[in-house]
Length: 502
Image (cartoon, rainbow, N blue to C red; front, side, top):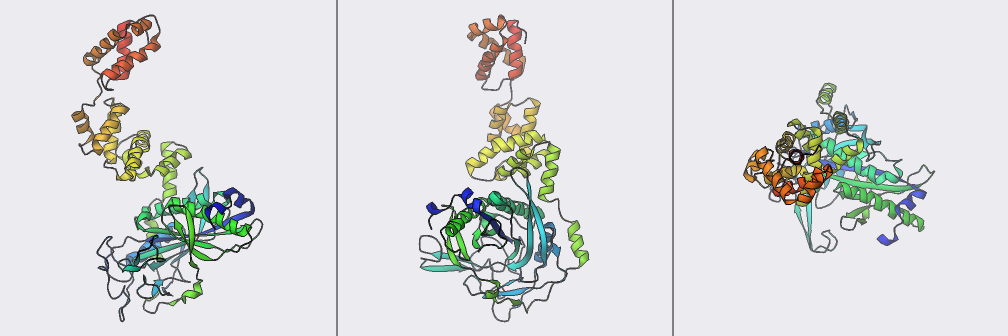
């Protein structure tokens, strides 16, 4: 079925309720792998971070990474989950080149965390609760690179290269309960959930959760059911979606595709699908296995885990302020409406703004510079605002210079430009570029006198009481001083010289 045959989104929702299930894999930032001592350094020479254990060689025995277990418990607590008093690992058996052991060490019916929820805030401030079925520990697979062919996938490739450096890296898989009741906002809910989960993971410090690097990946399950029905429809699973925008687009596309198939009298096939970023479409992968197809059984080489209640409560007490609570607190402290906080989040500048305020800036000024000039420059460079070559402390200093009257907004933008160009601290840039506002009566008075002399008609209007015309002379002064004049003081001098009352 081609894109042109899709049912319009709103039309699809007139007949069907969307049901979603989101499975998010979080790659933990541990120094070593989940069941061996191999390093997890990114970008290492292929197959240089392997050992008999993560390669599954005979006689090699696994040992659980304690930090990985602690991270799993912290994630579970932050997701309002119950923490198991006793749980164990299982072998998930399947045969594929990227899994050197021919099984994945995971958890099946006894996860470490279960029965939780995450509240997510939508663009209009509405809070939507997403139920969490489970969060369990497992290990990542290796990386396959398919050579030849047009798509980079195995179909059509001439051969494949395998790098097992990633095999065995700790993962936490977080599985939602079926998400119902989102209606037309289903794509937005999916995106907001993954975004909130990413922020939570970062706040916990257990992973950088960079989707573009595969540190957080989302499998998107979608099905449709007719209005009024209780039974869910057959689901499809779009694998390894790696951006917030793609999560939203994948949900929308699959809703439209499912509706088109059903309206045409067809049957939805339970399968995995691939998302194509360039077109915003999905294509069929393979028929989806059921749990029994993996022949799970308890891992015989690892003892069960029994986290003590004292340790769990100790970890609960160490949790940081979580993202939603933090945003609510900051919004109240800053006195801004929900839509403005949403703009801050959408621009990815919340943390830089907080750091700029902590460096001494007024919250309004910090928001102004990060949402305006700095967000624009980040967009031009194709980077996150926080990656710009300017620190929150430097932004705070620019804001202070504006507040002191040493710079106006135009000059402040030039100061920021200089800092980004590596010309030094804001004060150094101001001095080197000669950006400081001209406010002393001598230099400014000369510019005012020259503007009056060059514009006698305007000067006469001001003398006759039309003081609004002073704006034209102020503009002339600003032009003559390359924008460095104190506009307010220039207006005062103009009216004073022409004997007019402001």
